[in-house]
Image (spheres, rainbow, N blue to C red):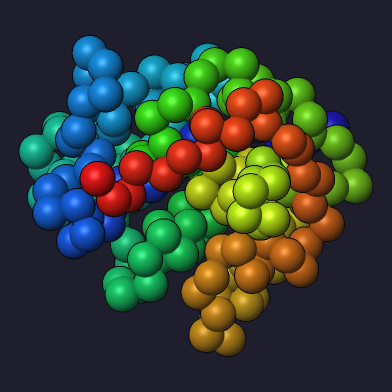
Length: 182
């Protein structure tokens, strides 16, 4: 039986390229940190945010806000924090800078789960790469991540490549458009 799914929204970056907090940008009615929460909630037992201490306080999210225990590693620091908090669940990880994701895209990842695969991720055909910031990490891939991280590897993409990953082609390549730069 596959484990429960918990959500992790990666919002804790400095947003230095954008010059402002990208998680607080509204592409619709709500800022991204709230929009992604609403998007993930139907699929997850609980949804957490990887965030800064300031974001956690400003947003009033209490214990659902996970501040990196090991700083200076970008998104890998957020993954490390979540994977060490709860290692017996699947983590549905979303970067906050993918505003074109829809419910059907998340459903696609969740329904693609299968025994024998340790992760499910979208494959970006344009870049010929997996998309680690939109990935469902099963406990096995989390353990591989934690082992590699402890040895100094902090690239989620490189770590995912050594797992038994199931890749999916998105219904529309535009959903993988990262708004990290405006």
